[in-house]
Length: 79
Image (tube, rainbow, N blue to C red; front, side, top):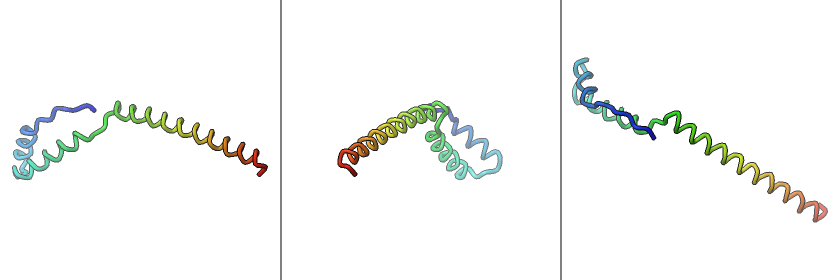
């Protein structure tokens, strides 16, 4: 996952200059830094999409094979 530089001290200073209490600004910036760590990039989503497509195709093929085997078994039993 990609990480981004985030100048927390500058962000706190800007908030304080804008009239936000320093203690509040520090908490806000701390939470913003946590959110930044969990953001997914386009590349992350592409990787997930590729893996998900493979998973769906693999399980669809397995299901079809299972259904065909079941039908052949029922046919063999005369049901």
